[in-house]
Structure formats: C-alpha cells, structure tokens
Length: 409
Image (cartoon, rainbow, N blue to C red; front, side, top):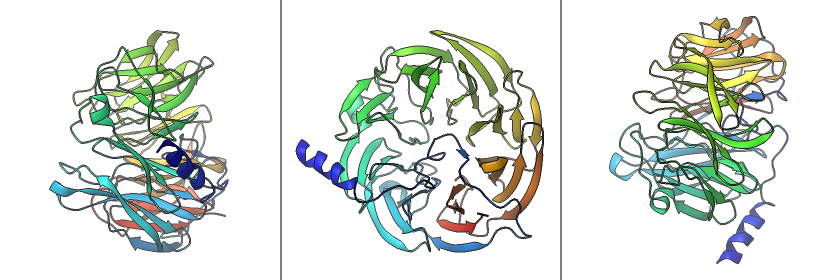
C-alpha cells in the first residue's frame, strides 16, 4: 500500500506543473499577501476593471481559489446541514469552464456551513483541511484521493465552535496542521503518506481558526501559530515548544496568522475588541513591545510591506502601522473591513466585507491613493473570501458566485 501511495504522488508531480505567476496557496504562493511579481494597471476606469467571465459554482464557500498551470482549484460545500459534503472544483482559468469536480468527504454543517479551506498545491498534489478535521491529499490532475487522515480521531482532539477553518502549511516534506489534541495540538504529517512525523508536546489547548506560519526568528525556523489561549513558536523540525505568549479573547477566535516584522518581532491581532500588538522573542522569553486596543482585526489578514504592517480593524479601516511604535502612519478608512493583497509597485487590492466593495490603491510608508473602485454584483451570503491575482487576472469569490477581471498592465 505504501509503494502504491508513493507511486501515486510521484505520478501526480508530472501531471500539473506550476508557473511563476501562479497563486499556489492561501495568502499567495509565499503565504504573506505580497505578490510583488504581479504588475497591474495603475488605475481602473469608472465601474472597475473589465470582467472576463463569471460563473456560479455548485458548492458554497468562503475560501479563496488557487491558480496553477492555467487551472483554478476552489472548494465548496453541498447538501443540507445534517449531510454537508465538501467538494473541490477544477476550472479553466481562461473562461471558468469546468474540468472536473470531486467530493472529498463530510464537511461542517452546524453554522456558517460553507467551505473554508483553500487548497495548498505542492508538486502535483492538492492538500485541504475540512471543517470537521479531515486532512486530505488529492491528485491535482483529476481530484482522486491519495490519502486521508481524520485528525480529530487520530490525535484525540475535538472540534471548535464554528468548525475548523485552516489552510495547510507545507514545509520540508511535511504538512503542518493543528487538530488541537492533548499533546498533539500541532502536528506534522508526511505529505507522501499522511503519517505523523512529529507532534507538539507541553501543550493542551484547542485550535483557534488560525493557519500556521513558517517564520525565521533569530535565524531559527519556527512554526508560529495562535491557539485557544496562546501564540506559540515550535521548532519546525521537531515540533518542540520554543516559546509561548498569552493571547486570548472571550471567544478564543484568532484567525489571523502571525506575521514577522523584524528578526525577533512578531505582529499578532485578533477581533472582538482585543486589538493588535507586537511581541519580541528572545529564545524562550517573550515580551510585549506595544499594544493598540483600537485595531482589532477579526480575520481579514495582515501583511508586512516596506517596513510597515497593514492590518484591517473591525470596520474602522485598514491600518498602516509603524511596527516600532504601534502608531498608525495612516488609516485607509474607505477599506472598512477588507481582505487584501499587495502587488508590484505598492499596488493594493482590497475586498470589503461591507457590501463587496473592491478598491485599487497605491500605498507606501506614509500615504495612500485610491486608483479605482467597484462593487461585486454577483454571488450570495457574506463577502468573506479574499482577492487573488494571477497572470494579470483578479479572481473574486462571493459565495457560489465566482468572477475573473483583467487587472494586468
């Protein structure tokens, strides 16, 4: 069976090849919201950029798409609350036409019952984590399942209030995920087989909707993530706990991945009036350098760009922080509660939860300019996906609605 699994994954590697302009995982191919090899138009005409196509996907979802080798991969949920099923759809990037779709198993159905996981593409494999805690590897060529692990059952963990909402991190032949089990809060699985390589110890708390980051802190590679009660740093090779820092709001909801903003400094932020802060890490010692209570980021994401931290704040705009002081250089009030990405030459695209407003901006360390604006006119439910840009095309999801727009120069 092992030889068969290895053969399948090896065969996959020749089926779908990624290109330089691809978007291969959540937050972009570098997992940092910085897509600096994408040159886009410096302004949009009235009404926004040209729409190339729009399709309706059978399965509902909040997840963003990925784009690899001229194909789009996106997850969705079908069925009623008591029988939700997760699906991956493969579409042609050129026109949105279907290539294949496949059911990958049961999905979350208790509340906000829509797909959350964005696939991670790696060497011909697609990796997803379902809302009920299944970790799955599929072939990108046809969607067939290579291996599947019920992480909750295997690691003795339990789900959380709104279901798992996590995006897989691939590093050094390992898939990093956080099932939240006793002494297995964070685990590393072999990407070829799904077998555990390491499990975190000295921790006993649940996951908190955060997707892990791979950060180099003081020259050491660490898996950094926010859990139910703490933000932690783990040795990326062994899972051993290096440091932890108390980080908790009343709902234990911390979806924003920690972001490095200096060789030993990490920015973290959470919603529900928690705020934002920068912590300094020296070995196992952690201290808070500053905290801004007014800048609570619910789940819109954070980026470190040109010496500044960009982070949304629960309807109060997109803040541009000086990470040394915690003071805002400016606040983009027009981007009220927006997900975003930053492209070449400081061009930023934001996608607002409030009504689906999309902005094109020019940003730098001290100011911003609005260069275009339009509203999404398709789809359903909340605007909780994020903008994706690949080879000059912007892809925007709104529930079952999915559209492509020409934004390249």
